Picture 1 (cartoon, rainbow, N blue to C red):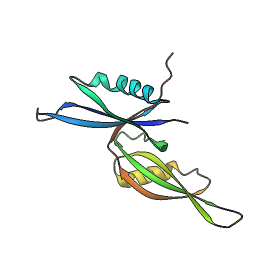
Picture 2: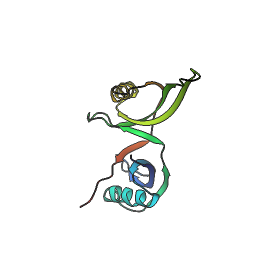
Picture 3: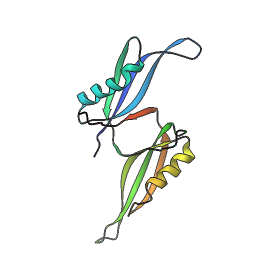
Length: 146
């Protein structure tokens, strides 16, 4: 199972109008430790940076699953909170267990549709409790090197 880290980088970006603006961008990295997450994150983003930059933040993410889309128009990431519903057989009480998922989509409507498509094979009942757009720009999966 993947361990996801949310990594943020702060740097001076040249905008379309030629002005330089200090920006902070967020990315998700699959890694085992904070050190590995920072190293892999920098390997991915350094080729696209010029000038000074700093890693602004690295934190463990509670993302249980990532639902990527093959559609090139799906360029945003949405955080979905899903409640899995189970029934305690002894007490007949409904229990809800929450999980956070990242869903790639172009807009909120597509994000809900992509989540439903990704959850289609789920055996148990579940409810979507919230869906919000994130600032995450890209996701870097672990790739085994030879």
